Image (tube, rainbow, N blue to C red; front, side):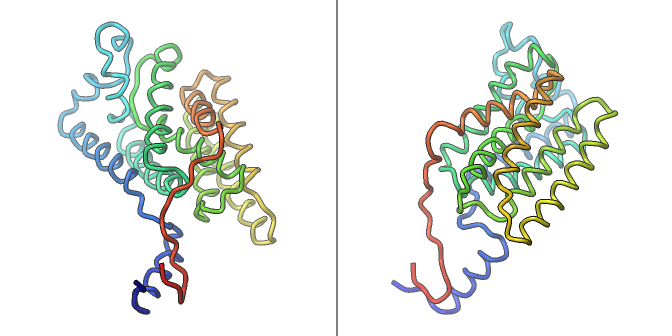
Length: 249
């Protein structure tokens, strides 16, 4: 069955604008759940203390390992940033990951890094460590030159590296932001000249993880776990149609 010309044109234009081959359904579900918990946290300020990561998770309150991924300690700006990056990186990762694999990357990196956090940063909460799992998957896909990735994947991954480097001591924050912006602009300049930059972005993710680990920053561990989870074998191909102008499904 062939779609109507109008539907084909609309689908093709949508692909051009969003650069996504399929809707990020798993990402949207995680985003909705996290956003809902964030709203609940603002309505009930004591919720953070009851659900965040603390040493209590190793002494009778193991649910904190998971619930700490749904509450936010970074205030309004940190919450909005985490949710925005979850949407963007998740949508990109869902083009190369099955939904089950995406959830493994997200919650696997989040839970393991929360456990590491009991040693490095015993108290805290936020889904940024889980987003690092998605960044790790994107880094591996970029290194392998996966053509299913949307065009914004490189820039979004670089900006995420700048964001997590900004969690270092304050004197490193400005340098991290400037480095991220310059990196995005330089990558765009190279691409405009037909030079492949995806491998370099993957290297930046590895270096970011290494720097953060040196400071015993939980995001470094999360990036490393995300990379490790994505490395074995080729990422499984997702099955979804790509509609081209003048062609049926």
